[in-house]
Length: 111
Length: 115
Image (spheres, rainbow over the protein chains, first blue to last red):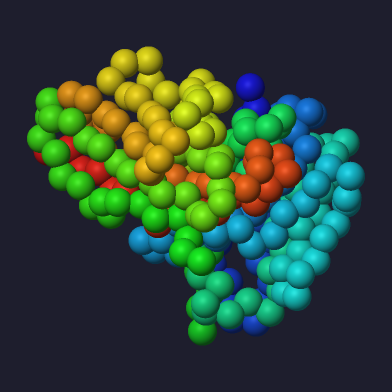
């Protein structure tokens, strides 16, 4: 089955700096790659996603890149703010419902 | 339009008791997914249901766990004879269409503690 690896497990940046989180997946049949943000005590919330026919997608301060050949995708957050502090999960979907999540990255943005 | 509603938010059970977790999907959503999250870990897929049907239960333990999504009412994840290892947060997500075409919306989770 699909295996999703996520790095780093924790990331601390200064407010205003950029943050990058990287994920790799194992199954080349995976075709949809969402990123979720989970705040303490809450459920995960979709922040951005990318499909396998696209290499990059941007939404304001957040961007995601996908390298299908290397089977890795990354989340980039620019001009980080304290409210960006949360746990971020990448995921890879194969078929209709086989969504596998990475183990998460705890991002701390220091003011 | 209310989001995905899960209850109870917190549940404490003693070993051997039963736990029932409920999930009301977003209005109009007929696809429901259950995930388990252990502390400091990612989400592990358990089961995918459409109204009255279990589509994929490959992530469900073979014993003690069951799920349903009846024609009327919420989806229910049932854990019989709970053990300490069942302690986790259980998240439900719903979508308008299968996950490959529709966004998954997550509830706030049910946190089960087994004493």
